[in-house]
Image 1 (cartoon, helix red, strand yellow):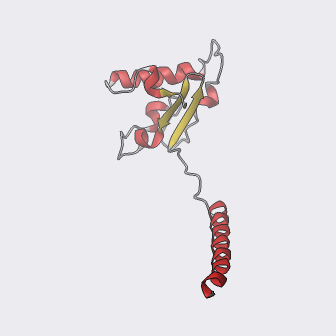
Image 2: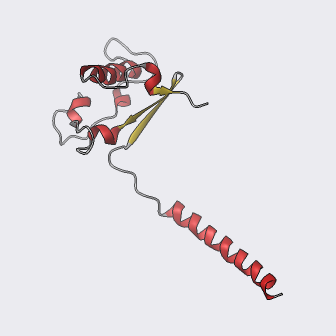
Image 3: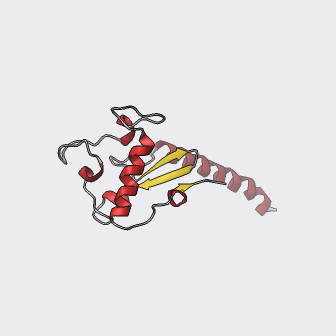
Length: 128
């Protein structure tokens, strides 16, 4: 009979701990990193994910910011995201659209160094 009396108390303690855990997770989440880990581009052909950390870190490929962010003059500058200048949709005489800029940059580099992915369906993944 004592076991049945303790069950509601354990249930209340469990629910209380769950609430505290959710509150702590929501309140004390990790800070946003200065540089992105991954950037996802959602398109009609599927989502293409760029692993910024892999490309930029010394433990990964080790590219310099200047290798991709072509408007930077030195490493001390804070790089702008591609979409700041290269907008979605149609480009203009002065500025190519974002998709063309990314395709030229990414595919061009991958072909130059003979690494995958270079085909559309290797980057653009449709979620079923």
